[in-house]
Image 1: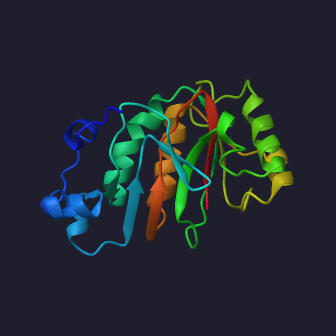
Image 2: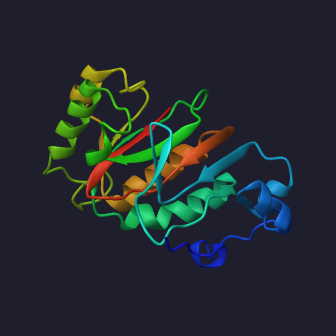
Length: 206
């Protein structure tokens, strides 16, 4: 399997030297951005190309980019461009800042293997098929459907997933909305986030 170097995978990020030395390598610890050298209230582990299916890792894109730990600014700066470039359809749920520990993308073929309940799968798939909406912030065609926590509190609310209006965005404004949502969360310890793959899917949180 081809694996990119940190410099090639994350050209805009400076990493702590101690997180790249032989001891960190032996422990299997991810590289950390320099901003985590001081106490941080916002830490996120990014595995851009890896999906976890009931606890087992599955590579969804190659060459594989290595796991890294980032502060909020480095995270949003890293993911924003790729989210904007993703041309597939996305249903995204705003996470609960008090309890979420993972925020990850699952493509539709992986819904069942990732553990999404049958009713949730069906509701999201139906929303992904809806077309013809325009972005709420520009005239471009919308391929994101964003649900706030007021509209869908969690994935157990199947009826709400199927009926809530949500907000429609193009890829540029969908990416911006997601990053803005992270900016509004004052404190987080996010153990896992990946990036979109495939033709369509959902960003969910646990």
